[in-house]
Length: 546
Image (cartoon, rainbow, N blue to C red; front, top):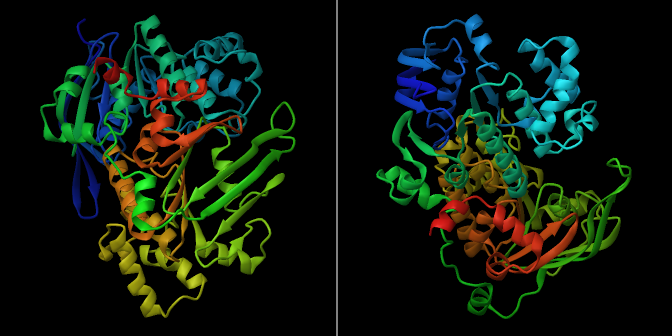
């Protein structure tokens, strides 16, 4: 058998109010035994529909016009649900994208792995020891400690390993992994992908890897399939496609990927300050801040932030990087007054000369603070009210502060949408009618409504495609240059941080282990932990072959 999976000429359309919408058009795919095939493309490119077809999970609203689908030599093109239920798990394992949303929150880890074993025909008396063995195979040390725990008690990386254990419970010949590490920091991502690659190598299984991270696709696949608009636009050996892409769309994706390109030259902090005025006073001062969460974790109290001190200058970007659990987001919440420090002090100094302590404010003080400092969250869909119109979302801060008349607020909304590169006609739509990149632009417009001087950005592009990431980063730089904004930028993606930062702080277990100008920290790091983060960043294969 020369191929494990063969799909030819797949055409899928979905029924919609205004007619049929094509999702896949003439898509063909081949997977050989023991190889890893990466499928890449932007949102809306047809990747999810293709995965659903490979798993036999297309819903009744999807119409398969034509295709020829063979799995391990068997024609599975026209199988029903009952037959597919015997294929999934035993012949095809599936690792979904979101570990938190894919595990049952009210069942223990052991029960969920045992359930997968039961569905694959393992006798009840054998399930408990097999579940422990599977967790160990998936890279969880001392798995007996985790069997009685619930998903919320585990880290994201451990949850993803549990999903891997469930996927391999039936010893499948093919594993499909849909964005398996998009929510993980670079070191956890590397550990999970290393282990998944080892499992594939040792078992002889094949892997189909769905990802929007071209660095991951480059490092981890033998062959790559590039999709756009429901079609396959380019396919070939991975390194050859990246070295010499034949299609303009592929070239544009590669140019947009932060992990594969050098950042564009940007005037240094010193140059930008010299062009405006003398050394500005910092807008944020953090002095000796320590945050301890009492009774969290198995070992008692958890020190989330340990004796942190920093200054953030106006008009500059200070990025904070580190693994999940390093204290990045807690530090951001301390700056905005959303968490109260155990010890230490935070001061935010407005351009009007007012010094604000975000932890000593009443209701009126919080309203003053919101005029100076705003936040943009990671998930633009979760942070926008799904039933509100875009106009209402952007105008909400203005209404809350009694700014302007209704007509003036409508004009302000149009100006804000234009400022973030959106057509004002989108104001009458709801978030679900926009793309991910458009939703994040709306979130930025809302944050800018009151004219803040400081914007805290918590993983603002991690959920976006590479080309949309590039657009949002360019927008943030443009707005900073036009408005003199200061950014506190939280991220686990060092390639993104390299694109936007003036200064970088590296956090590990609540401590600042390295800090300095972005060019120095990210090119000649001094601390072993920073060097480990850089070594784990996707795109290693291209750097080694440069």
